[in-house]
Structures are given as C-alpha cells and as structure tokens.
Image 1 (cartoon, rainbow, N blue to C red):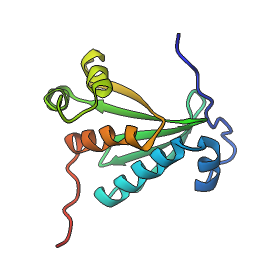
Image 2 (image 1 turned 30 degrees about the vertical axis):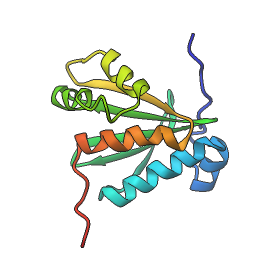
Image 3 (image 1 turned 135 degrees about the vertical axis):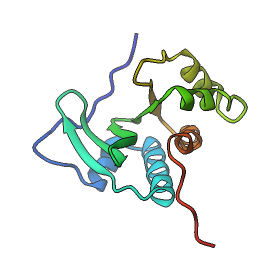
Image 4 (image 1 turned 90 degrees about the horizontal axis):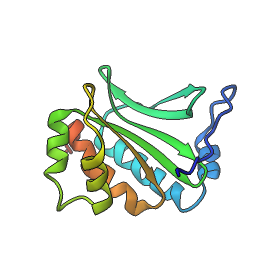
Length: 147
C-alpha cells in the first residue's frame, strides 16, 4: 500500500517560496532548501515552475532540452524525479558504498526502460538529500568553482 501525499494542486496561482515552505513543513522543508541550495551553487540552471493537473506544481531544472531533476513539494515531504540513462544507471550502481542502502536498493530495483530508469524519491529530512547530491553529478557535471 502506498501513501498518497498532498500536493499543491491550485493551477490558478503559482506558489512563492514562503508558500512552498509553509506547505511542505519541517523537517522536509530543510531537505527542500538544502537541495535547492546545492543546485544553485553547482549548476547554472534557472529553475522553472511548471504545473500539470496530475502532479500539481513542480520545479524543473532543465538545460538545453535535458532535465536534470524535478522537485515536487508535498505536504510533509519533497518528491524528486531523476531519470538515469543506461550508462548513468551503471555509474550509480557502482556507487554502492557511497549511497545509502535505501537509495542503492531503489536504483537496483527500478526497471531500466528504453528512456531511462525513472527514480521517484521522497525526501523527509536533510540527510535524505545527500544521496540526490551524489547522483546529480552523474547526469550533469557541476560547474567549475572559481579559485
């Protein structure tokens, strides 16, 4: 049995950061903030707010037609979608000692489709965001830091 999480479904109004933070609530909002900060510091991608009737509001990080990650605010959680291609999946599976057991098992047990391995990940705490921060560089190299 899966738990359905409430999402931001009002398509007439794009929520701002404070509305999203209030909706998600603690401690999941800390994971949201941590992951958004990681993306801001490591990728030159302007996040885009998108809405669809099935999932509600999402924030998609996309560049040159390729989506890096999609974040969905939920009541009490953050849902993350990362799609790994075949080679990216192999790299992720080779990171067994770097990823949490939960994340490794999710990757291993998610079927590889023709368009990738669709990883739907739910974050509840900042610790949960650490695996995402390890997977994202597989999809796109982080920007070089100035020294």
